[in-house]
Image 1 (cartoon, helix red, strand yellow):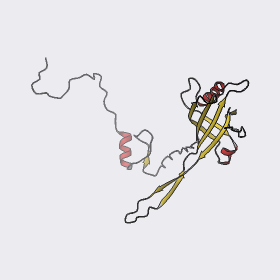
Image 2 (tube, helix red, strand yellow):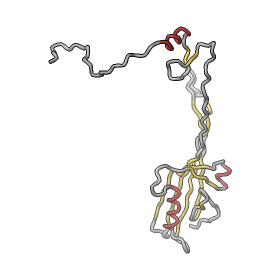
Image 3 (cartoon, helix red, strand yellow):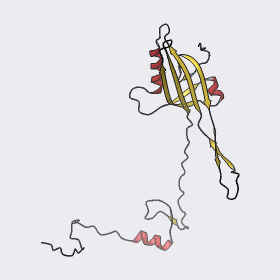
Image 4 (cartoon, helix red, strand yellow):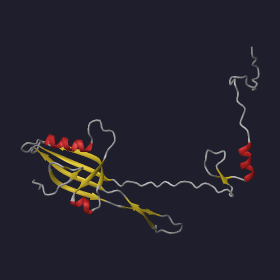
Length: 195
């Protein structure tokens, strides 16, 4: 079987080597079914979208100047370099992925298969769409002078305290310091006498 080298996929600016066999992109919506008492029908609620999955199939074979093992090493170094502990986020460039709005991916899976036919390596690459999460941080507002909120006695977090109780917290003393923390215990154990 002959495959054309007509489609190009680049990952982090590296053109994936080999003959392009296929690309498959799967995306899905997240839909929850709700239970309604007394009804056989389950209403559906759309909650968002799942991350897309991109599956590529390549055929690696020996060509002039580049052996299939060298091509496999290029793919392996994209997937995981020696000493790498955490998968990296990659930029993917391809006409099909661009049409599906997938520009950043995590390299999820790599499968290689070698057969005795035609001295070829079949490679399947799986990428998962990477969508960065934005986390917004809000700061708590300080209480005004006439309100019952304050920060006394609780490490600076806001509370709803009674004004009299706040005054008590501010004026109460501290526990006395003990110099000897190994003093005798007031506990009494039946049948035990100290020497």
